Image 1 (tube, helix red, strand yellow):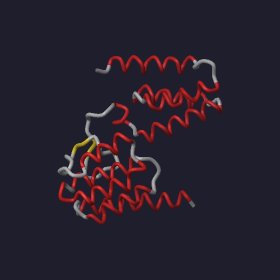
Image 2 (cartoon, rainbow, N blue to C red):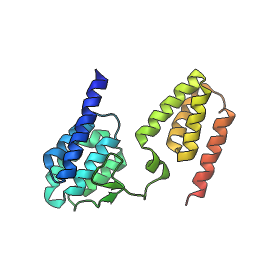
Image 3 (cartoon, rainbow, N blue to C red):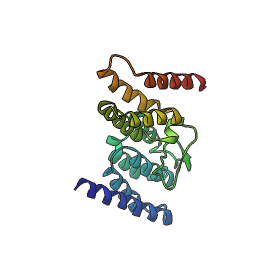
Image 4 (tube, rainbow, N blue to C red):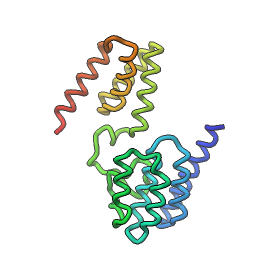
Amino acid sequence: MAADRMWRARQAVRQHARQLLRQPRDVGAHLARLHASLELPGAEPVQGALADLFMQFGADEQELKRSAVQLAQGRLAPHVLRGFEARVSQAAIPRITPLATRWSVLSRPSADISTRARRCSVDDSRLLAEQATAAWAAGDLAAQQEFLHHCVTCRDNLAFMLARRAVLRTAAVLPEEWQAVSLQLEQSNEATP
């Protein structure tokens, strides 16, 4: 039942996104897409829909933007929420913006964000950490290695930190492979200006 509802929400998000590509200033399509995004898990679809709306509407439409932010506020990270709130009474955001996500269809994510954020979302990192924790509990070495490879390749410090914390709740020390990844991630953070 929940999977069916999520599938319908994804279809609605796509349908409204296609409508916005044809008519980018269609207020009804923006709001319908935002509502459909709220039916999906995580913050990224909601943030992407909101970024597209903020890209199309400026200071003259601040009531629309304020209403959209109020709808989405429970799903957004505090710093993202502050970013949108600061732009409610201002001009439309630029097409390339750190507020956009891969779910945005009119706006584009800025390259001025972390490597991890460009490669995977916070939602993805949390899900991967949950899966890695389950792999740890099940003793699934192959899944753990895949997770560790992802963390190093994508420099996904968030996923690693969340999974590491869970592992250390049940283990006295990190396994050797995990410790090596921890060291690699620390070194890559130090090398980044």
